[in-house]
Image: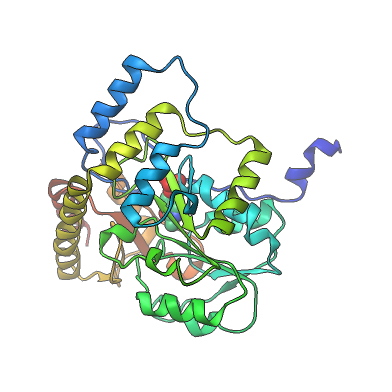
Length: 352
Ligand code: PMP
């Protein structure tokens, strides 16, 4: 067989993102987008970019954006790395940092991108089981080991780890890189960014896709001490990775600077989440406590796959995972607008 087939032969498992159906009348609650639009200031900034400067190359270092992110978090621009979505930032973290650990640990139920990257870069890894109640137990990560990565809140469970537990994890792993993926932290969690000054092994990654309602713009970033950021830049420059384009740099900066706006849409999502949890519990669902803009829920008398299919027949799209078997009974439901959640609850009433 041709050697060009080697990647297939070696069994790489591609990452499968949630589907992006084209039909306009769907209630789309499957990929954790924000149901509200981004700040009007983002649209203004992107328009200005389109009118004035599109013929010019973008700043390869995103200096203004990094300065804006640094000001927002109270760190220096040398502590900020930006990428085309946090998936790209995470890819750089795997290549620049985690790849050099003896092995890496992450929970057995977590963001499915991590094992994909381990496969691609041939990084040894161990999946650490969650507890019975789907929690990350820090004690399981305290033996001498290698690098650590997990989202906080975790995905797809939505369970949030308290900041004190993150600090205990860092204190117990002084020699290992620890990456905390805070894709969903703005929906009610305490960020670990404040720990970066004290823990040189900590890298925190964030995205504008969820709390800033900018999934289509593709902007994510990482915060760590300068030596970690320097390692990420080294890999980026070696790959000649694409810089953020002009729309992304201008739009992301406008969004970061309009703090009142994105905090207000996050607060709306959190209010709707509370109501959705109550209504689903009233229908008999067990709903895991969520710190994210989605909930993870199962019904004792319903099959997860069948329920997702029945909702789909009613034009409501939620996410269902077949693997691992332990999560197969669950649905992961993005918190939408109140009206979208009403439509979901009405459909579930008819089905359960
Ligand atoms: N981390 C987690 C835990 C996620 O769920 C996602 C979204 N799929 C990402 C990172 C990546 O988000 P993005 O590339 O849009 O920044």
